[in-house]
Image (cartoon, one colour):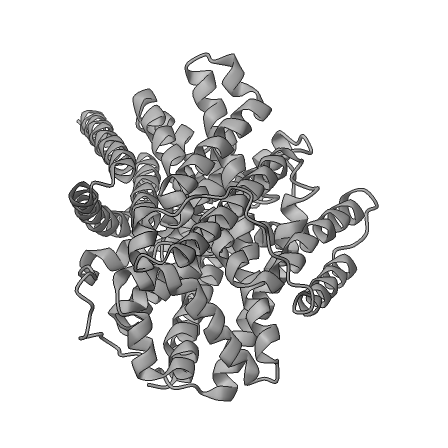
Length: 584
């Protein structure tokens, strides 16, 4: 199979979906109003509510939702073959994910930029609101913990990426000051920031930075067994755990401060610069595919699955979460993006367009791992890399980085530089998602504080500390961070269940407006069945393996979602009953 053919088919589907399907939804279903006064204007405060140029907002929204997940998920899911992953990414984005993102941004804008959890209370009931807020809290907990582990592992494997990643923060602050304090136009600060970032990426190969082991962990029994009793090798593995733990702590200290700063100072400019970096990355990968015409070495359907690999049905639909449909996107859309939307008509460009952009990144991940990486290691090497579910989960980002390195060589970029570039891309997007995720956790904790009259929880410094402390404990609580990718199936399942709940809220609102609900009801039904099934499978596995932390978190989420579903059905019965009574 030609990688060029997959690239053309996938991108053509995305463009067609945006041009035609999103226009139909905007005009006939959501009925966007250019004269509607958005919350960004109504509640403008310069911190969270700020009317924003739609291109800048697209950059924030795009990079917040297009974190590491649309790279990691497909890079793991290709263990089942490239065809199931490709079909779910393309069809899931056009008919489910983009509809969900567009819808949550629109419904939040229509309700004073309230979060999707608060909207659940208004549409489903007060108890439904609290239940949804708790589900969202758990999802954000998993998102931030997983991405902290992903970034830490990439810092460990790619020390050349450390300098450009942290240096980009200073660049983002300068851009924010230039745009919002000195009123400089967008163009030159953006181009200058991108140029400085690539200079730092080039410098990164000459100044690799590694963190020392501050903890001095003793080897675990599993590490001693893996080392065959070699105490020196086991201690080396424990030292890696110590370095990883150090990075996790540093990342959450950074996330604490990033999430309490005004959005214009770091969040917006960093996301805007990273959106340009993402477009460059998509361009490099796309051109690499065209110039190398790398064959898709990986099988369309993998008939040589390892014994520990689960069945792709239904696990595919939660392994690839972001990149097809993602509940986290609804949290971003209703949590930060709706507070910055200048005009309601911008929702189509930001919401549906952002999801299409993320789907494109997931498509590139599939091509990088099944063509670029597979060519580097060969068919046998590819099967060896994906020789177990554990190795596929732990090595997904590495396969992507190496695949991008191969494809970039096709357009004349040295392999070592390309690998650092790819690592910076993944880290930058994961970090921007953490920035937004911790900020959203602060909002959720504050909302729960208001609900239960806990004044301390409403303080942004206290709520942010609680958020990062919980995330850090979960990230380090699974084998000192070494087993952090075991969180991925639980993250994916919770993410998709949250997406289903968001679609349910949108569907109920459309019903109240007496509009066509099929565009949201069909993906809602499919997603709810697949993710509930997947959650049951996950819980059985955690119980069998006696992974009590994951069993406890997963079980709590499952109970909350079932309870919320019953509340929604009760609200639906009431709505239908009122409708019949009115017609009588």
